[in-house]
Length: 315
Image (cartoon, rainbow, N blue to C red; front, side):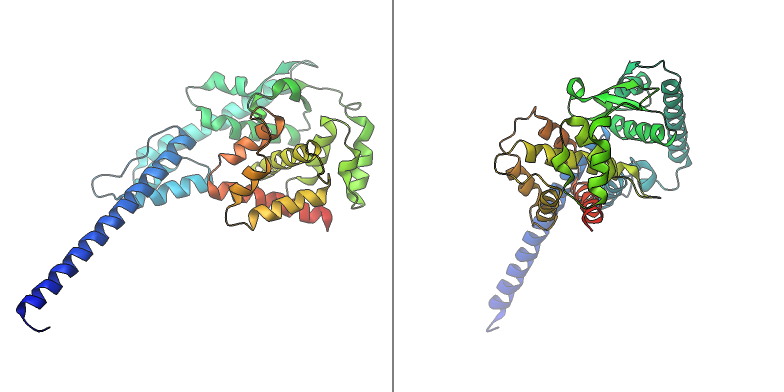
């Protein structure tokens, strides 16, 4: 530095640069906070908040990430870990939800043959405890428990595609399902066992269900939620292949699409470009929509789960 003025100028510029950097970082944090608050509200139907009196936006962002990753509203417990009121309240609500699930399963169990019902409607009788965002997750749990208890239900997919979600399908209680989907089922099962292209046996929607049930069978000690979502994704891809000219309708082609998506820097864009020609009310878009709107980590977990299932099928 030649003189005092040069030194003062240098220090002034340094201070200004640091101030600008601080403003830029604050803007970035504000935007990230807004984004995660939006995700939290979309997912759980509630506004996120900063813990008082000494909480920070960063703490809330990290807490929301945990909630989304675990698919559970844990914000109160994370931000106020020592507050027994929150913990007790959450625990009581979770116990009540388990009781509701048990009540609905027992209700379906004693329904007369061919009784029609919609799981979403059964759940929404308890809308003082269950919010709209939880209906799909609880529906999948109920379907899983019914399967475990060998309580058979069939779904009318044509009339049930309201949003393409399992809770909106019109189900029927089936006491004697021995004749259901008998035509192709054994051929499809044998084709998959022989590592053949089972998709060539598809004649109707029930055949698609059979194939996806076999390929996306939940593994022991694994959360069935991921396999149910992987099943929906596989169905969407199969219907895409069947309704697209010059496409190779095969399990191998399904795997190629999944691999291309999960290895891409922009996985959502890969699927967006693939399905661009399909109407929003098509069964392809209806099946894919719950996956499309999922948070990034959930989105990739569903694709990875299906990829593992397809790798096992083609091994």
